[in-house]
Amino acid sequence: MEDFNENNNIQPFAKHANIKGEGEVMGGRKFGLRRALSEINQNLDKGHDHCLAKKRTSSLKLAVEIANKKQCFPEETKKLNGSEEGFGVWQDQNEPVPMFLETSETMLEDHDMEEVEMEDSFEESVIDIDACDDGNQLAVVEYVEDLYAHYRNMESCSMVSPDYMTQQFDINQRMRAVLIDWLIEVHHKFVLLPESLFLTVNLIDRFLAKQSVIRTNLQLVGLVAMLLACKYEEITVPIIEDLMFISDKAYSRSQFLVMEKLMLNTLEFNMSLPTPYAFMKRFLKAAQSDSKLDHMSFYLMELCLVEYEMLKYPPSFLAAASVYTAQCSLYGIKQWSKTCEYHTTYSEDQLLQCSRKIVGYHQKAALGRLTGVYRKYNTSLLGYAAKCEPATFLIEETNNILIEK
Image (cartoon, rainbow, N blue to C red):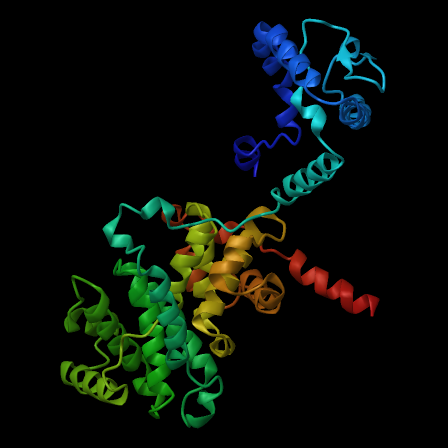
């Protein structure tokens, strides 16, 4: 906002500021101007001359009042010497008659409009977040809006029923949470791309929503989902022997291949769906984030991956709520700019309920048995994001409202 003010310092009365300068330029030919005026007056009849002089004097009086109010001239130049019979002249003979004295009362209205426009210009505006990438071909600035419009149309296809676990007879929500928490640690140890983690969780939920699984094969489902996600996202893919090793050889190579075939057929080989990661990168750009906000947002987002109840939110909504909650946690105040609202299409009021749930997960991240995300982000590599205090004021605000009611 400060840069905007410096670059757009509007002066409502700037058009009067140079009047004195214009008078000095005209001063060299003032006598020629007056002589020309006197010749014109001699060609006019007396009746016409009297009406014109009277009209001129009225305009002159009005102009003097305006000039006195706006203080456009020094006090010594405001004294007039004239009558209704002729043109008024300035006592200071070095100053010609300024042309602005023809101005009518509409000048004041123009000034008022300029002042209103100046006040409106200080309102927050939406920033063009892609302007800095005009020369970057990888940023595909020409198509980025169309890409994210397509992602929004497709994100419903990547969602599953928030109560799909009721169709499973041998596994439950708790087992899913244990599996996801463990896979987050495995993903971190293998130093894989974040896209692979989000796609892994998506594949697990979509597969379990269509296929019943016994609890002894749940870990195999998770490892095969990570294998497929790595084949889709990574350059270097972990080999099956590595996955067998981290599972303590609970499954054979043939079991991995059978489960891989079953999962791909169940999902109809459809793996090109938007995950929260795609939206997160865009929304962080809209928030003009730094490394701290990046780490904090992904920390909160991965806490949500573990929670089964967060499946009811679309990926874009979950990403927006994570960025909003991260800003509240880091800055200690509610912060959601017009730019963020424009690019996410979600207002602050829409995000508050989900954000309060995320704050609850943040508060208990270091407690209990499922602490994989907390330990991952409690390292220098990720900026010790886990040590940041949660935005508890969002929850306290709700409690105060309930007490008042």
